[in-house]
Image (tube, rainbow, N blue to C red):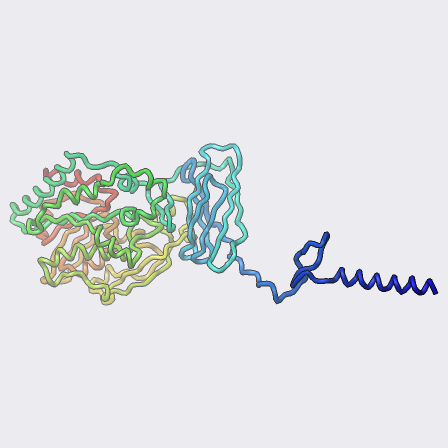
Length: 438
């Protein structure tokens, strides 16, 4: 009898202990050691969010040293994703545009160790990618390149940097030579019985129109807000357009238009066909004051579209593959061209690389309501050739970079206008153009 009582007591006590051990401390929690509450990790799929998709890992296409402490990488990845680069002296970033990116990494000037670089990509609404990892060997040649990699995948040519920093300004003697030489050339034409007007047209550097794309460390080194282009603006400010001498700097127009369009190439030293179009407009806004039928052609007269072409003239300077690092270029083509010889069909090249536009060219529209023009020029003229020819009567494009002004030849042609066109980074040579007329 006593054994049965002990057995019943044991059953009752065991049941009570089991009930206490299973008692809940609240939803999703159970009693733990010392009575504390611990999370309930029971797998309940209804309570878990699905994992977010990861951004695709970027792909590296090319890499090289720019200087002993600057390194350049180019690659591809998801459109509009942000690239983060670690392993250099400072973190670096880039954005993938047109499926590609190019970035600059700062390194120790001299190092006895290999450097491991990691590249991540992050798209909106996705998790960061797995890293792309590569090593810069301590034995890799640190050969210099004349380039700087800015923001928005913009590559800047070394020859434009002094203009950006406010260095290499004209001295007073050079400015006097330019002004007197231009005025004397105009007077010489009048003395020869010509009514030829003189236009000096300067195409700005990419960094002048897009200073925000310059590398930050260069923006911090600006020495002067002045530049040679600004000096020329000031020099010719007093010139009356009726005097037959006109200085044209399309800076204000390009600054306005960049709010709606991208005007320069990212992989090339030149403006694109849209930038060139607005430069053409500035020239013919002036010419149209004398020839009303030669006002600039409106954009509606052009087919405008984007075209992926081989990378521009800066890519070989990096020793990168122009088929890998490409340019999403603007094409601006006259819809109904009269000058068929200058109508560009689609190619895989930026116009400046096509040699047929470098030499002497002459075209005639046989339209006396429009002007005759001789244009002394550099490679920035090439994307203006077609609209300039369409808006002229007779147009002569001199050999590129030939600024030898021959008065006898001008007398023979008797043009309404002479255009002396140069890019900003080459105007250091402008005094030489006018030296013989000072």
